[in-house]
Image 1 (cartoon, one colour):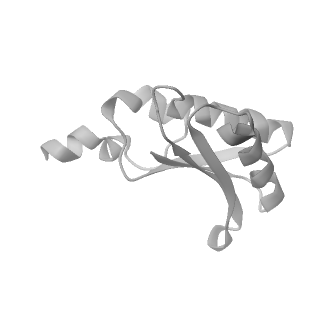
Image 2: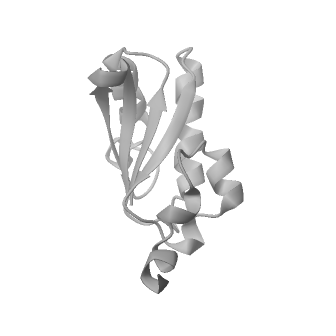
Length: 116
């Protein structure tokens, strides 16, 4: 699952540091790959993640880890986005609200798209 968290800063080094702290290859969360990216058109940065097993590390756990690391650096989380689709077991209304998901969360549920 591709999952991004947007931060209230344009400092790429902040997003890079958060990505390093949470990605599995650096001792962070299991099944998480992450990097920091600039969003030049919005003058912000994001932590872009691939969650390779949402049952080992949920979307919410990944979001909360980014939020904790951002807080340590004096930065707020603006919102998050899922690129593509997520299994219904990984995303519900409560989770969508907790992770500040942009748009209609129902549009991101794989099973809903398959049944449409």
